Image 1 (cartoon, rainbow, N blue to C red):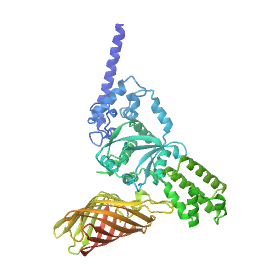
Image 2 (image 1 turned 90 degrees about the vertical axis):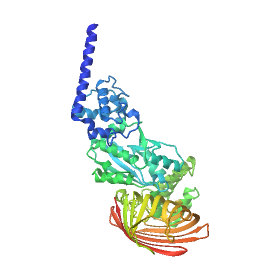
Image 3 (image 1 turned 45 degrees about the vertical axis):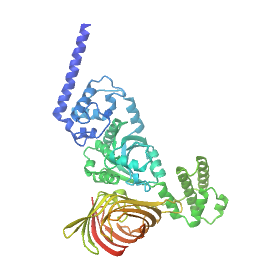
Length: 598
């Protein structure tokens, strides 16, 4: 018996010495200061951005990366438990990196849950996915990005999507915006079949989807998957502008390819379209694909059909058309194919929108597909390709403008951190959508500085009314503006609603816009605005808008604005504008300037 105790004591001493030797070797290599350890810890500097204690093995691991590395080494080298839930199985990315860095092996384990995940994923390649903006949802007007782990299966629909999002059931838009801006929600990684994410974005929310196949090799893909496993059920505070969905995809990709410096492309905010451009600039994109939304597809049918064909589709969707009567109508076989296909798409859309019951949907959808199948094979509906989001102008803008006003001719210096307004080139953007934060304009005239404008938030959503869709248009603006005919600064809040017509190339809109103005003379009124825009292609755009506001004190104000912009790519544009306003007296303003995007 004493001999057994002596052998156990000796073995423990040797074991401890071995661990101490590993720690000494780690210190000699300075591994806790290495880039890859910082990547694994999600630590831009000396502290991790992950806020969940379950991610750390040391009580001070979040702030002390060296202590976290030492704790990891001790567990991997000394723990006898090598099954599910153990450090050996929970942190495969840490384990594999340490084995490679220290040229050792921590042995074998029985990580059945992890092996089951690998078998389910069958990870071979990775794709960056960008669902475009959801035009009638302010929270989604920047778009979204997530990653897809592709298997060896030919169909990508059975692949798995890796997503990061805020966890909330909040239905109040104001509360959601406030908490999202200031870290009121936890964000979690999730893993879902790709077809479910497509159903959510492409079908339910009518968002076009772009896919960017990445050129990661198999070892890089596996490095990413190992780290994804480590992040299961781990939370971090979600911030709308920086630590958001797109930002966390940058961490995962840098884990796979540490030479990529994706996060270095961003400073104080991370916007989904800009992350797509960062992947391009880091030479990570191998191939691009476009998946049109259900709405885009239905609008393609609308463009192909004659008025009587559109009426036939409406009748079929409502279950009103006699099939025999339709067959006897003056349609070609191809037109009939398009009619049944469009009707089937619309019936499915109405079901997704909750406009019809499941029973009605199933009956009508089956009937339409049966009739369509009887017409045999035909042409696939042509869908006009849209400009890729990575071709859009950059989000931040500096404007240098010379103004000629009635009583002064100031040099105007503008700065806007994000994102896009209706007067700018729509290439790569959602036509009719605007979202701006902190748009600031400073005037310099005879060594005098003046604040011309400070827009806290400006949103516009102008989806056109079509034969098949009847969305409403709306916009809002809140911030300080210099009143034209009094040349004083006032705080203005305006919210409007109305309708739009047109398409991505040319559109027009009508809005009713109540307004509250605070400043030298507080007032409120109701305004009526009409306007339109033309995208001439080749990054040239014209816009016109006219309106009248009737204030409560009996004063009216009319306003006319015309702009024209020539862009030379994603980095800049030249703009010219004319504005006139009449309230007590008339004032004309001319501007010529340059927009620089970065």
